[in-house]
Every structure is written in structure tokens, then in C-alpha cells.
Length: 361
View 1: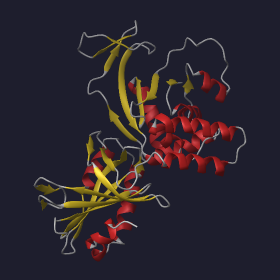
View 2 (view 1 turned 135 degrees about the vertical axis):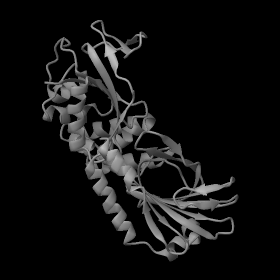
View 3 (view 1 turned 180 degrees about the vertical axis):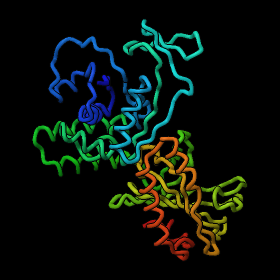
View 4 (view 1 turned 60 degrees about the vertical axis):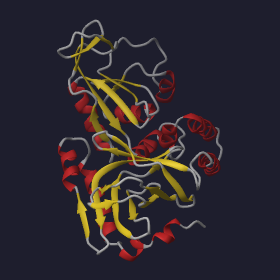
């Protein structure tokens, strides 16, 4: 049996998930002991085969352990979470000696990592995009009172994270779920960007690179349906990726996002509002945070040109990610369904109409 030590904002959901798949929970926290009925005795001397803790950005977890144990946990997560993304943090494995010291293989530099059995140690970066967070919410809710969007709110950190704790305490005391969640959402909305403010667009690649496509101006934010219209202006010449159309000084882009959607589109215009083309990005569900819009780019894109030409590009990049075990085949099927939906609904006239997009109510 694989022993796992888990800490961080995903602890309850991952504890439940791994217990259900035959893992042993080692050195549980006091909160986890209470929720799962583990005996409140002295710390077990059993050392974990895997250690799990939240990433610094709270968008997933870091898992450290031996290769065989990692393969088992990868299998469970891949089976359970549609859009989970796996990345290696280290190209070389680590070596843990019997004294609990750690070093890079072929290196004499020691690093401290007590609590893992001696042997080769690998580290895995696991990202939980929107679909994964929602599934983990469901798993957590089977154990303890959980608000809808728990892990998204927790990933926001700061005051929003504290508000979640208060809301879930209210649920535990029997307060009506509808009232609690409505009050929570109202408070969270007040901390999100408003029309006229600026926001970053965090474009996360499957392989882990992060690109900031902003800052962008929020032209419209319809909170009733989660739709945002963002405006960006360009001051340097270049080429629009995918479209292979010239980018000129004074050009501007209008991006249309909807929270939870699996795609968003950006329409490009010259300084004189002449339409240059549309780039539709396929991604994990759009999430909005106090300072950024965030998603994982799934590489597949749809390009639309002014003459009506439409082309889907970069499928091979997603297929490569699947072959490397970074994402699941199910995620590819979800992406392909989104592409088909978009292709069935494209209107060139609508793509050209910048004025209806950027006008404010």
C-alpha cells in the first residue's frame, strides 16, 4: 500500500480520492483526522512514499516520491479529473539517502527533505484547471460542507479564502445553502475587476510556460452571465500568431471571454477599425481572479480571415501532449467537441462588427 502525506488547500478532496483508491494516508493533519475519523494518537512512524502539498500559486499540487508510487497516483488523478495537467519539475531525479538528505543525482550538493524513504525521488507538478477544481469540489462535498466553487475560491487566496471558511462554517451550522452562496458570491464579485479597470490575461501552456497577454482594459463585464469584453492596443509592429497577418502600430484587439467557457476569441483590427482576422483559442475553463483571467491553453486554435477562410491549427501539439502523458485523451475529446461547436456557429459578419462588442451599456 502506498503511503501519502497530504497538505494544502486540496487536502480533503485528495485524501478522500486516494483513500477510495487504496492509498494509505500517513501523518494526517488534525483537521483531516477529524473529518475522516482517523485516531487522534501519536504521529505514526510510517514514512510516506509520496508527499503532496499545494503549489505556491495554489493552482495545483507538487508531489514528491518514488517513480512507482508516482505512477499510481498519476493513474488515479488522470482517471478522475478530466483536465488535470502533469509536468515534471526536474529533468534529473533526486536521491534521498537513509539520513533524509536529498541531492540531485550525480551531484554532491545536499538538500533537506526528511520524511521520505531512501532511494530515487522524483517531483511532479500537477495543475488543477477549472474542470478538475469542480470535480474536487464534488469529492470534498461528500466529506464536509462545501460551497460551490470551493477550490476556485481557495485558489484566489487572501480575503476570498477566508470568506470561504466563514461560508462553510455557516453551512455546517445549518444556514440555507442558497443564501450563503449568494452572499459569498456577492462579496467575491466586489473584489473582481470592474469596467474601466485593467487586468492581465495569464495564458498557461500545457508544458508550464506562462505568458501574460495583457494588460487589457475591461470594456464590459456582465456579471449575470460572466461575460467580459477586453480591449488591448498594440504599439509595435509584428505578426499575429496563427493568422500570419501583419501587426501594425495602432492596431487593437477585442477579446471576448465568458467564465467557465472552453474557448475565447480575439478579433484584430487596424487603427482605422478595419478587420484583420479572428483567433479562437481552445482552453480549459476560463477562470477570473482579482488580478487576472486564467486558463490552460490546449494548443488547438481556429483562425478566421477577412475573406471568409477558416482553418483549425495545431492539433498535433495537443496530440503530442497526450502521447507524453501530460493530459488525458478525454481532454482531447472535450477540445474537439468545442471546435465542432464553434465551427458550426461562425458568422463572418459578426466577426467584423467591432462596434457592438466594445460599446458600453
